[in-house]
Amino acid sequence: MRRYHTGRDLSRVQSIPELASLAQRYLPHFVWEYLAGGAEEEITLTANRRDFDRLGLCPRTLQGVQDPDLSTSLSHRPAALPIVIAPTGYNGMLRRDADVLLARAATAKGIPLCLSTVSCASMEQLVEQVPGLNLWFQLYCLKDPAVQEDLLKRAERLQVSTLLLTSDATVLGNREWDRRNFQRPQKLTLANKIDVLGHPRWMAGTLWPHGMPSLGNLDPYLPKEARNAAGAQHFIGNQMDTGLNWESLARLRDRWTGQLILKGVLHPGDAERAVALGVDGIVVTNHGGRQLDGSPSAIAALPAISAVAKGKVQILLDSGVRRGSDIVRAMALGADGVLVGRPTLFGVAVGGEAGAQKALQILGDELKRAMILLGCQRLDQLVGEHPLIEYARDLSGPQGS
Ligand SMILES: Cc1cc2nc3c(=O)[nH]c(=O)nc-3n(C[C@H](O)[C@H](O)[C@H](O)COP(=O)(O)O)c2cc1C
Image (cartoon, rainbow, N blue to C red; front, side, top):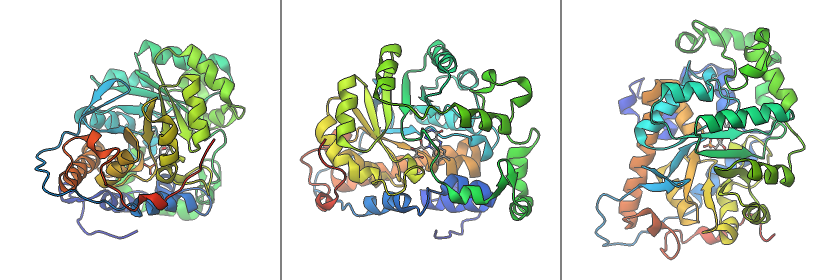
């Protein structure tokens, strides 16, 4: 990754890659690898960026565009930007209370935040500490139906607007770089322990005073003595339902009366099946390149999925969005909005709530500038006939059902 030299002054940060560079310096090596890495050879992680970069943007001139409108509707609620903060687990490793800080940033910017099943803050904590939050909840299907039912009841009690079922992580992707940093689970190698000592700001901002955080949503299901990072990881490792299938989704559709979105779609046949089952939306994603290495980039998979699902359900995309112009590309190919994972995590790591807000500000500003230069006043003008991406046609994801 390119290095930037702006020091620690957030107001000087110009872009998401620059924020990433600051995060890499701020975080210990093992946390950085957890955050930034992908599975195995990182073929998919690399493709996520490469395929966005292959999409050219063709402006229409003399359109007189002034101050484009970036507002939209996500899951039937107004959003100031076509962006959702993606569900990401274990954010407390980046900075103490990172989930709360991300939720505050999302609320300040008028967009939803999707909380992970394996978040450090519980959903109750978030609702209590962040007034006005538009909270979505991401569900990992768990083997114990009583635990899953309780999670759903808690989400209902808190009036979570949207439930997102993640289907691409029934087993953890093969993240070798992550394992290499540990002698055994929860036990860093000596080299990594020494590296941590070289990051006193991270230690003060994360470990002090309680050490590594546990997983707030799961704490109620753990014995008291196991409510810590090790206990929670052991619990979730045993609880993931590897048998998750279409019947599971159908049952969830019957059970959950609110908005239901399936996160983990890359094949148009799966998009069609999810639509037929009555989901309200899908997320075209490869989990940020962290699961099946070799799977297509989300942006390459999107055109074939839009062909079968556009207008029937809400189509969201994530994996590799780093520029406002990437949002343009995704929307031009049929997405109704995007999720961002690492961009706001880079921000919250280096600058807490202000850092996460900075990431969203950058993406919003870039989106606005790109729309002016392209000649689009509104987001819906990005779709369809606008000759936006003349070179897009050679991208091909999976075809047919
Ligand atoms: C550190 C990290 C943790 C993640 N944890 C989860 C999770 O708990 N649940 C989930 O559905 N997706 C998880 N994801 C995937 C994100 O929701 C999202 O799909 C991905 O980050 C998008 O790619 P991007 O990081 O390039 O924006 C995680 C991603 C990262 C980087």
